[in-house]
Image (cartoon, rainbow over all chains, first blue to last red; front, side, top):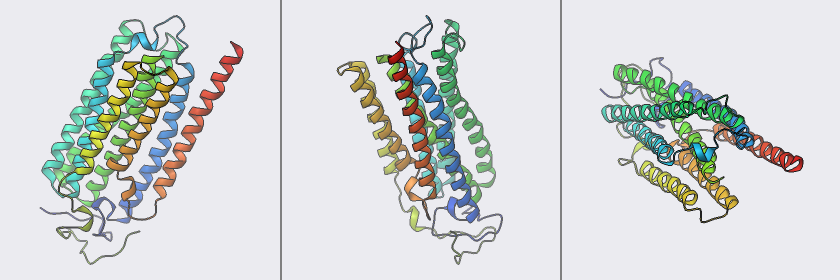
Length: 208
Length: 119
C-alpha cells in the first residue's frame, strides 16, 4: 500500500517530507526541538557538576583507575552506529519503503539495548569494587550524569518499540512518519550527549 | 506553514510518486556522517592514548573534536537545516547551547579559580 494520508483529514502538503505534511505534524516537531533545547540545559547542569567535582575522590578510586578504555570505546561505537542506522531508517521512510525502514529501526533498538546492557554491567562492576554512588563526590556526579543519559536511552528503547508496533500496524502515514522522525531526533540527540560524556568524562578521566 | 495542495486528504490517497524533497536513492549524507563520526571519535581517542601533547592542549583538542561531531549529528543526521518554514527550532537550540555554555564554562571558571585561591 502507498502512503495512507492524514487520519484527521487535515490539509496535507505534498511538497515537503511526510512528517511535515500537516500543520499539526510541523508544530509537534518544533515542540520537540524546544524540548531538546531544554534537555541540553538539563545535561549542562549535570556536566557542570561533574567538571567541578571530578577530582574530589575522598580517598576512593579516581577516574583514571576506574575507567576501562575498551569498555567505553565499545559503548561509544554501539551508540554511534545506532545513530547511523536510525538515520538510515528515516532515509528509507522518506523513500516510502516500509520493510527496510522497519529493518533499520529494529537494528537501532538492538544496538541501543547492547549499549544499555554494557552500561549496566559497567555500573555493576564499579559498585562491586566499592565505587558506588555514595563513595565520593566524583562518583555521585559520575553516576548521576551517566545514569541520566542511560535512563534517556532506556526510555528511547521503549519509545521505539512502541513505534515499531505502530509502524507494523499502520505503515508509513503522516502520523507515524512524524512520530518516527521525532523519535529519531531524540536518538541522534542522545548520541550527541554521549559524545560529550565520552570526551569530558571518559577521555578526560584517562589523561588527568 | 501548511499550504493547501491538490492532494485529496482522504484515506488511501497517494502522494506523488517522486516528491521533490526525496529524490535521493543512496544515503550519502548518512554514510558521510558515520565515517566523519568514527574519524573524529578515534582522533580524540588517539590524542588521549598517545599522550603526545600537554594536558591542556589534549583537553582543548578533544572538546573541539566533540563540538565538530555534534555539528555532524545536527547537520547530517538530524536534518537541522532541512525544515520547511521559519527556523524557530534553530534559534531555540542556539539559545539552549548559550545557556549550557554559560552554566558549564561559568561553573568551571568560578570553582577552579576558587580552588586555586583557597589552596
